[in-house]
Image 1 (cartoon, rainbow, N blue to C red):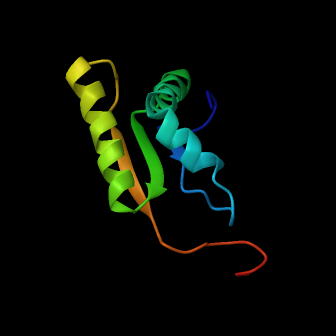
Image 2: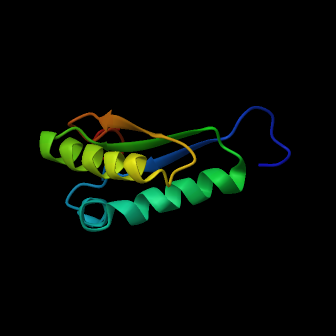
Image 3: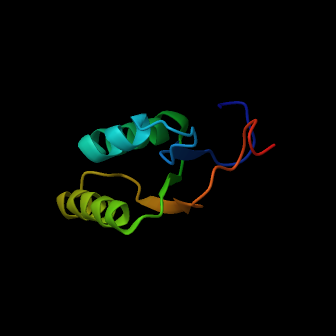
Length: 98
């Protein structure tokens, strides 16, 4: 990263792109602050100025993430704000859709 041009960006992929897999969803629901801590640490390590978290668009998930982000904002513990990016409701790539 140190020798690259431009400003680094950190993107966390929590959209669970693999069909029939719930590992990302389980981690995001059970330990949202752990995931957000990791994004902040990664951003600090590479000198990023922007942080994104790519997640499913379902309403309950969005509410949960907004709550976790609001809690962190109120506590003032994050150096950078995290922008939520909603994933489409379909599998984007792989053998089945290629």
